[in-house]
Length: 361
Image (tube, rainbow, N blue to C red; front, side):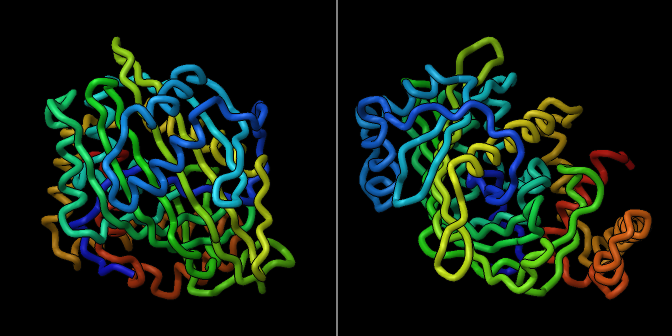
């Protein structure tokens, strides 16, 4: 696990899906991939990840697929033995502004995606900072290629309460001629054993309390030592002009316990539908401009840890009252038992930013 330093933080597209969530999955289409799509996935997730130069001709079928399925939920052929799904959806922001939100070491991922990411830290020196090249001058004069690793921790699964930590290998690249940015994420080994977490409020509020106990909170599964075994994703962003970006997310996942996976294609598809809904709300809400979020980060990061922890304690007192109202005794006990001391520096900064966004000081 990386240190609590926030120096390598940045919002990236390493999706973390909720493999038990069983909401509406949308229309899952046929599994016959168009010509070249499977080869494009193999090229990005195996060859480019291992150091080969990206081949625009091999990648072209993937971009064409997103352009043709800009607003669709589809099933995918298995990859690495894992079931997969695709979700396309439009994002109504200029490409440069979107990239400044998504790939920015001064905008922690959990600030924009508090519904799925507890923390996300680049562990390869300099990788997070290199992301600025994606949006500093858009479109860039030449392609940008960033390789590195990150360590992600997830928020509780909406149905089971399981939280996971995992190492991810990453590639982010831009194709200027296509006005495209692609983000590749591959989990090279099983995640850490899931631990129990508790959500307060409605789905997506971002108020989570974490325990150190292994297992799931779902009735009858408290004993389970679950892991995410396979987690592969590709995010594609295509500038279409007039403040519109066509985006597409490809995801494959295996997860479960005792060496068995309980993930079905419908679970992956449903998780992507949830991701689309909550991310769209986050981006379409009264979100401060990227420059304002960067200023909030600089302000929060300049404070002493003591000051950040004191602020967090005030927020957690509100959470404690909410946990009591929602009759969540485990969350109450965790919050009363010095939970604030278990938040690392990155979590304290992100919490401060989120609170300042909603309650300007």
